[in-house]
Image (cartoon, rainbow, N blue to C red; front, side, top):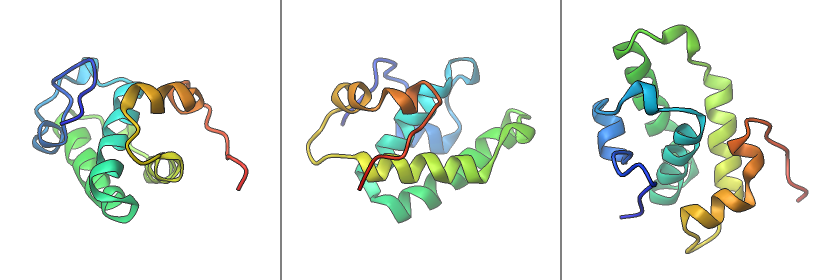
Length: 108
């Protein structure tokens, strides 16, 4: 299983809501989104990640922070940029705009 430097971030733990909200920063969101896309493909990733994120923000009382359009945009951008057999460090390096919170649309 591919892991982030914070080994607690896995799809399973995210879906269970078993992650520390204080450590679930923007990069962690992108990382977990990347895990979903590489595991399930874009359509299933969007549905599963969105469902788990909604459940998580409700659990921690952060519903006002949830935005479906931003969630879906990031997942679709991640799906568009994923390369076969690329690990997280390589993806992160190539896509710093996603990590910095200023996504750009790549030329087709």
